[in-house]
Length: 300
Image (tube, rainbow, N blue to C red):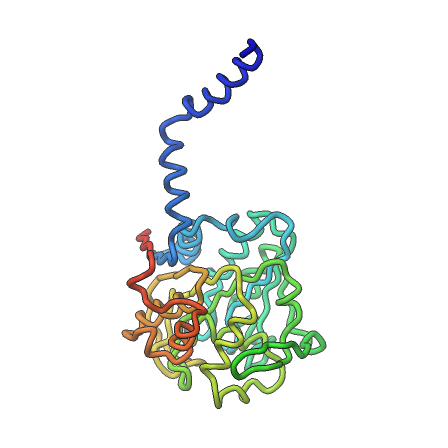
């Protein structure tokens, strides 16, 4: 071995030997984060627990790359204030948008197809002001952008869906956990009804199968379930503060079935109590068996 080769080899080897001890724990933590299926963060700050849950999964840069156009899909269906828990918490949505920009996202689009007057829903929810202040786009859906798309599901074969969801580089689902008269609970999979055009009521006859079909079509990069406040009754619209329970919790994961299965426990239920969760598990779309998942819980 000549002198130049020896020095290069020694220098490369020396890098590993010279690393501070803290680097070992850093890489160990990163490896552990990659194996986590669900992160559950609890604490008084909605923004802080949202960031903590995503960090536990490996951080936002695991999901968002520099230059990405990102669609963030909250639930903004109702003319309700944040305290009424009818829509996704604005602080949770804003925290995700901020992280996306910090990861280098080129553009972040936030939208939903509300049931009530869109103008009132966007403003009353608190989401419009929160995300616009960060530089995100938050336009009302344009009916011309709903296009018939092949779903090829068990029930849904084709349906008009919002094209911006499929044109984006990444999609993040941010539902709220709340009671629903027909589905029992509405969380991540049911939140996709907000990108459906046409008469959405038509899927109510076979709702569970339709929700799974829709969730399999969209396949978000990340799901962040807002349980800062949950609506325990008279959902999905709510209105009475007596039906609201403050949990100060956020759940993050990639598997929508797993997220919804854990979300069911917040209401004293199991994932198998929800038809769409059970079906998603049975066909292998995700897992509802929480005992088989690595769940990291954080208290801030």
